[in-house]
Image (tube, rainbow, N blue to C red; front, side):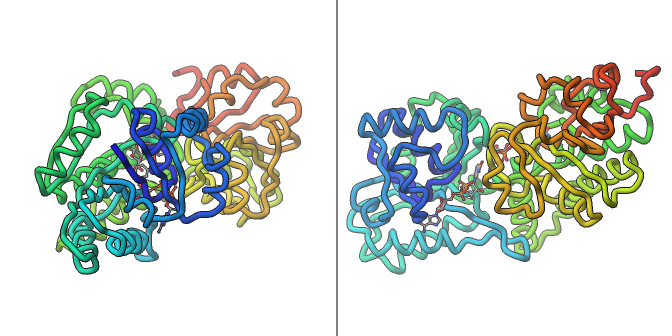
Length: 435
Ligand code: NAD
Ligand code: UGA
């Protein structure tokens, strides 16, 4: 099938490359010239495990091409995916202007039947708006609009796309359903066929529910700290109940990324518009914000006075295996420390170039050992697996004080103690003799 992907970011580029891998002819569209230049050289503008190799292979086979022209995409491809960004506005609503711009451009170029598939995460009535926008400007009504929300996670995006738990398609015509069934048939995944509105709601509800689990476990972790219990034991004891499930019960410094924070805010706003107060979601967001400050307070308690201290940071990305800094908890934690005149030196394996754009006054260093040199405390803010196998004796020796605050519960407290560190984590403040 001939497929265009309009918006070649984290979702669009993975989607396009994976469809090409499945044998389709794919045209990825983006209006960012720097991204297109890199892509045309066979380089991935984002760090996503396995993606760059796959881009190169499919470009070489002639199945994956790149362009800046939506007109070309509409002319050549029957299936047009929209996967542009939907950033939050000041008031928390999703900014849908990128979607509208693309819809208008599609309308101007529509000559024969096209299926327009909404893949960005959007409020429930967006499909209707896309339809109305195109219908008002196109010369004919030979088109369908469908919704196909994406559930991939950054860091495992290629795997998630090719081996999905489920594929949700929201359709309003038999023709659209037939085309999407054919497109996804090779993935052999459970297909949930719904109305456009239900498909959009499934996406917002799924992200909101996962974020709720995280805030729940983070609040529980604070209770564990206060009560002398261990959140890992509590989460395991809960998670073995299949009705609860073990995933998304990892306590830490709160959720970040381009998805949960903005999607929850957008869902909250959309519920308000529909006349509903979804206060639970506000509480989930509030707990998430205060979780970062909770960690900052832990740091303060451990160093006594923050003012004038030097702190090393291991990990900046919002989670491991990505270079994405959007809404990363590290941003707020570092800002809170800098407000107290704390000097920061930080290391991240992949996110430094994006971090430079959002963090100022930070000294970025080339490896974890430089991050630890001469500091009063070392913080773990992203759970990169390379942090598991560091030479901790070397690290301890170069630190001003052997104090480690682990925001991702990466290490075993007893091991850290044996290695000579004063070690604090989240929800695991069990006195050693009772652990
Ligand atoms: P992104 O910012 O990485 O990518 C969006 C791309 O669209 C950018 O490259 C931008 O240049 C391009 N673009 C914007 N306007 C354009 C236009 N008029 N013409 C051509 N290109 C245009 O964003 P993303 O992370 O890929 O997210 C895209 C959507 O998918 C969002 O709604 C997001 O919520 C949703 N989503 C993201 C993820 C994720 O893991 N990042 C997962 C599921 C869903
Ligand atoms: C999330 C969802 O998992 C995807 O299904 C969805 O497609 C995507 O959002 C989206 O809609 O864009 P992603 O943001 O890439 O994917 O990453 P997650 O693995 O879900 O992690 C999100 C945040 O929650 C990270 O900051 C992570 O550190 C945090 N987290 C996750 C926890 O603090 N504890 C957990 O147990 C799990």
